[in-house]
Length: 214
Ligand SMILES: C[S@@+](CC[C@H](N)C(=O)[O-])C[C@H]1O[C@@H](n2cnc3c(N)ncnc32)[C@H](O)[C@@H]1O
Image (spheres, rainbow, N blue to C red):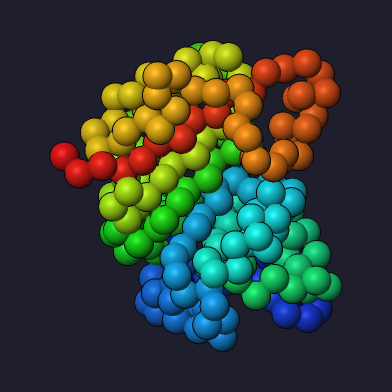
């Protein structure tokens, strides 16, 4: 699954390949930052990356990996990080559906963030959605015991779909119970998409689930 990163970056390149993580393990990737060895946080589909940078800066004791399928977004973020490095952050260019399963050890991720994944609103495109039963099963396997999965969308039909699949996934427990989801999560920072949707009056949906033993 090797894909050499598109476009050269002048300075410290925060991009790594899935192979490097697979073969060295995340702790070795972050060995130069001894403060960031506590746990691993992964954002899937980081887009412009402002949420991820903020997360990494506020949690210097944790290692962060962002995965995005768009080489343009990854390259843009890598150029920004080269100018303003964040030691506890690395980027992967690739399809998270493949990368997560391939490169991460089971029971190794403290938190997965999936913010505003593409909703693929047309029925015939719904199979392209990221949140599906088999991918959720993979995420559960990769989480540490009591690790968390954070999901957000602004799209009502996708929200219904996501809610049903999260509720139907074995080994996950809703931390917002008795509510299925929240529209505001205190302390949560806005992502670029959330800012746009909120300015248009759309209400987001947020889920927080914990991995529990069966
Ligand atoms: C709607 S944008 C949301 C971006 C960001 N999370 C936000 O809230 O501002 C969806 C992002 O997910 C990325 N993406 C879509 N499918 C993906 C996949 N299978 N693996 C990794 N990233 C993916 C897209 O390239 C895009 O950056």
